[in-house]
Amino acid sequence: MSETRTLILTGASRGIGHATAIKFMDAGWRVITCSRQSFPGGICPWGAGPDDHIEVDLSDPEGLAVTIEEMRKRLTDGRVHALVNNAAVSPKGGDGGRLGVRDTRLSAWHHVMQVNFYAPLMLARGLAAELAAGNGSVVNVTSIAGGRVHRFAGPAYATSKAALAALTREMAAEFGPDGIRVNAIAPGEIDTPMLSPGSDEIVRAIPVGRMGEPDEVADTIYFLCSDASRYINGAEIHVNGGQHV
Image (tube, rainbow, N blue to C red; front, side, top):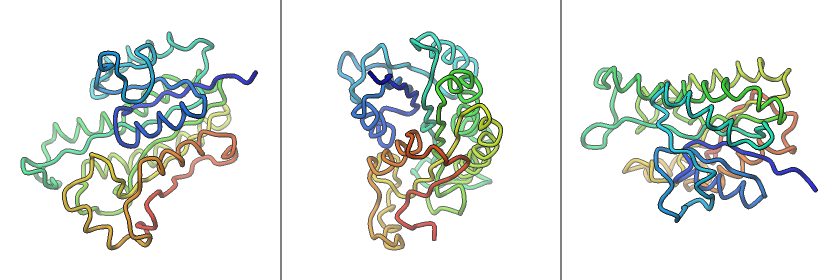
């Protein structure tokens, strides 16, 4: 009988995270989900039970450190086969509009960097031994905004994603000898609740002529965590219908 693989996934309650949880569970993986939301009273939107869900505020470094220890306790064999850092925040103005460099509060910059950059760093470092034991794969969810000025994504979000892309390369080089592969995916306009009003206007510039679906991103994440990508390390894959070209 083949072993059950374990995925730890942040930002699991909606959008790309929700689709990713379903994709892996359908493939027979155990999925330990993490989000700011508690387990919703016996009705789980992603199909896992309360024993496989951890409520965590990624903006709290001390709380996250405690959570990493809780993750270790929930592992039955001390192995993690995949870590997907999907959770992210993007500050907006009072009208929901884009905040620029000068009008984004310094506290918002710190908050975004903690959730989008430092939390993935802490999780990968904190679970490095378990990932090595499982010959694991880390997938960091970056963004098209990390490589170009985006109409809706502000500079704090974009900077955090560019930093996460750089961290992906560094971790791929450092963790590779331990049997851990580290890659990133950079989604473009994906039809999720995180989309800003007016995003449909950007679709006209996407070569394939439409937004992406969360399950299409989940398929790419699954590929990077599977044996089919066993020689891919340090890559950032664009999942945007050619929007980046």
